[in-house]
Amino acid sequence: MFTKNQAKLIKSLDEKKNRLETGLFLVEGEKSVSELLDSDFEIDLVLTTTEFFDKYGEKIREKSKSYEIVNQSELEKVGTFTTNNAALAVVKQKKILEPKNDSEIFLALDEIKDPGNLGTIIRIADWYGIKNIIASKNTVDFYNPKVITATKGSFTRVKIFYTDLNDFLLKTKLPIFGAFLNGKNIHETKFPKSGILVMGNESNGISRELEKNINQRITIPSFGKAESLNVAIATAIILDNWKNSN
Amino acid sequence: MFTKNQAKLIKSLDEKKNRLETGLFLVEGEKSVSELLDSDFEIDLVLTTTEFFDKYGEKIREKSKSYEIVNQSELEKVGTFTTNNAALAVVKQKKILEPKNDSEIFLALDEIKDPGNLGTIIRIADWYGIKNIIASKNTVDFYNPKVITATKGSFTRVKIFYTDLNDFLLKTKLPIFGAFLNGKNIHETKFPKSGILVMGNESNGISRELEKNINQRITIPSFGKAESLNVAIATAIILDNWKNSN
Image (cartoon, rainbow over all chains, first blue to last red; front, side, top):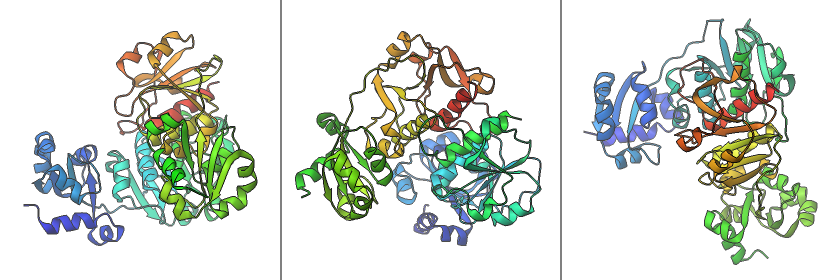
């Protein structure tokens, strides 16, 4: 039976301090929970409607420690979605170690604040085969329910390592590219097979402290009058150019 | 003096039927209102805080038929923003005619439903110098306050013409490119100087009816496992490749 204590725990996971304390996070909605069931995350509990259970019951039994059949209004009452007629899962966070493989493209995020932007960036990273993101400690929490939802399932394949980004960039031997409004045109840039792409904060761009570590300032050429592009859009365009030049 | 009737009118402009009836729309926030003041839109009324008026007072007097100094909480009470410490304007909609110039890139949108997506697409179009968007009649309204806000000022430079998209595509002599999941790799596509890029609905892509008008199906190559990209992200990547191959 779905208990009051379970409901209380689920509601508490909307807040970062409770996620830190419990080591748990929420996954909600058909797309995300179905991808979760195909991943190696440890699942504590799945709340599922009968419709979702009809489709994924076998996997739920196999992958989740426990499950409860609930109705849509119960899901919406405990979760963060306004509308959820599918499922919600309580999942164990993974311990993410510093990525060691130096023969790939890493994305480095400097203070990305908006959960929708981070989630979208993770989805884009997954599209371009980026497996590891390094993020400054003041970047929004990966396990924020809005981030998880915006990844459209890609949270199961892309890892984020939170660290002192300046230290990380000082240590690396990889070439470091950074997105600015006054760098080299990406259409004329030859990108290496492996390297780091640094993307900065939504309002302020890459911070002064990090700027000195950038080997190559790059820019998306503009043909019109918009002042800037959203950071997730810019990340997508640059990764597309990077992959295209390899 | 800021009257109850003005407040009532402003509140009503959140709904499409009232925008249609009055021919007016709302522009909110510092970025959007400041770009509005540099545009040729006819402005009926600006509600401004003293801070915003200190910066833009001269332009407000010059461009707007009337203005009222209000405080932040009055702005937030009548407008759609949760936080607005700058300004809000009531603006006349423009009559948009069918674009005639055939030597440019047009974006054609088939049932884009999300206001944030449409606004972001308009901002991207502005970045890439696209001046005209053709949209199916079931695409979200350009004058929706969420669309206007998401354009980050680009609503002043990009026009949307709503029409029967199928008829439009049947008539045009320009080559028609459409984004699909199984088309030609955009990295290997030679794009023409002028043409039409069709982008489809968030869930269903380009509709069956329009599909037969597409001359070249194109696809963003994937290097990872994400199933799809957001439509605004995809639009940005394709336009970047289009501009890069010219």
